[in-house]
Length: 451
Ligand code: PFF
Image 1 (tube, rainbow, N blue to C red):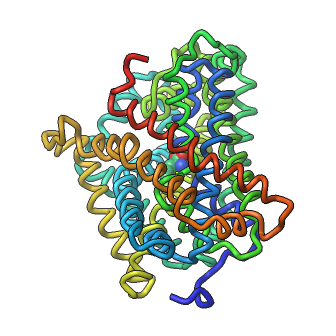
Image 2 (cartoon, rainbow, N blue to C red):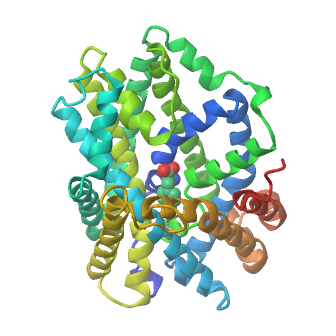
């Protein structure tokens, strides 16, 4: 496909907002605050930022270079530079498919909770036990979460089918500022709660006694998931960047926005949780059980809970859109079929996988893969195996396979002034990132438990 006919994003700001939309997601809003709080608060934040700079940012730059230099979907991008490495592109597509399989289910939950909030369902009880009962009845119901998964996929489909400019770009330009405003409003509200300061302390006080070698590995894993690197979504988006879009400032902006959203999410969650004297719990129960019971105690509870779940839904949807585009662009360009048809193939196949993942939390609980439900197996395989592996290959590919001149030219816009910086990034990609990623991988396989 000649790149004259290929769509591009209209402006530099769009490039940042679209890529930030892909990066900012459930990982920032419910995972980061908890992981940080448990792993030394402010100390974890410092380590996280360090990992984002020496690993997340270079790999994002690598993916930007791979994508823009090839003007192609993830599969075609690897093939463009090396026929041997094209199978890496296949890994990207597979990983996106499997991540979407469970991510779209959770995106569906966020939509249901937005509706539940609007209907004042959350305001009805301040008892965590009642919210726990509601949540477990909902996710194990044979059809309701499936319908919401399908709704999330249909919304995503609509955006993708509208195209790169009219769909993805317009949607990100509209939703990202809304997301940031909602987040700031909620953070201010939460910080104003009596006793909220204790939560701030739990989240940000640097407790170095909780820092160990494992903390570094946890931070690397979180950086990776949060910045959406390692599965071709940044490659695909960068393939729509204009030739004068500065890859360095775009990547820095996306990394800063992503980190800022994670920190703001902590400022929403912890002051609220601590103000009612609850010990923070992990992941889904924090967001779908603990927080609803807190919202219910607040004046105007329906407003706050609606705002919060809408925020989660927006964050989740822009991420699902980025994953969908990885697959749709690949099917469209590699099989030479219409974009709309490609989008339908993606939507329908993911909906089938998402349905299986959703049902595995209820009706199909007996279907286990190595002892895990389908939902947990998808999460486990992607986060612990496929993401680190494909991130490592992206780093190795950009560091060793792409020609040095191509790499430096793409990154610097052919300005000699920045060629030093480009060389530093190349060294990080060639040596530092692969070594750090090997550590994550060994850790995930349980081989570093002695640390
Ligand atoms: N970065 C997203 C989050 O933090 O929730 C998750 C994600 C989305 C990972 C898209 C990878 C991806 F391609």
